[in-house]
Amino acid sequence: MNAPSLNSLRQEIDAIDGELHGLIGRRADVVGRIATVKPAGGLALRPGREAQVMRHRLAAHKGPFPVTAVFRMWREMMCALTLMQTPGLKIAICRPAEQPGYWDLARDHFGCQIPFVAHDTPAQVLAAVRGGPTTLGIVPAPIESDVAPWWPLLAGGDATLPNIVARLPFLAMPNARARGISALVLARMEPEESGDDRALIALETPAGLSRDRIAGGLAKVGLPTFTSVLDQVVDGVHHYLIELPGVIVDGDPRLRELGAALGLKSGRVAAIGAYAVPSDLRL
Image (cartoon, rainbow, N blue to C red; front, side):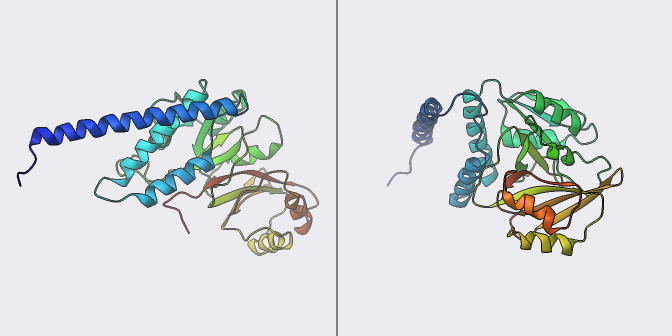
């Protein structure tokens, strides 16, 4: 049996390319039909749904084609379709001069179609998101050494304050300048479940709390055991960022009960978002 010629193999590739292009058009058409049955206005963004899609694609992938390339292809397609549904969508990125890697994180997750605007500080990003309901924000993930943490600002209760809705990178890219850093995505929408999530609770109190006391309070009100607790003191006030499994919204009655369970006479407890657990952060 004769081996196929180079020309015939290239013709086969051309045919496959045509099929792929046609399928992308079909997907765009279905997304357009979905847009007609959804409520008008707001962000056409589904972080939980997107995480589910990517987990399925990554789990199903086989063969020598790089899995990171599959991720980028799907992310590019999904974000282009999101932009089609939200024409005014843009992304405000905190990109300090000494750390350009946050731009890479944004590009790898949100693609090359959505407009990006760089900012020097998380406060500037937060102001941009508060000022534009179709603006997403990308800020550095909190770390213990932060001298001016941005996340306590999300617990203010104002209607324009965003929630944390995603964590980056969802899948680390091999050639990114962003190795060793992570970021959180802010949006003026409620977080949604993906099936494997982490909720974030901000707790403010003038007095310090031990991890054991926080764990006991969570258990008393029926909340899951925390996966991490960050304690930062600003102007003599303790701010705790509590991460625990699931998705918890700010109206959850257990949040009101938590303050009483911890014996807080002043301060506040607020849900400030949740994110789908990235594929390289599974516990």
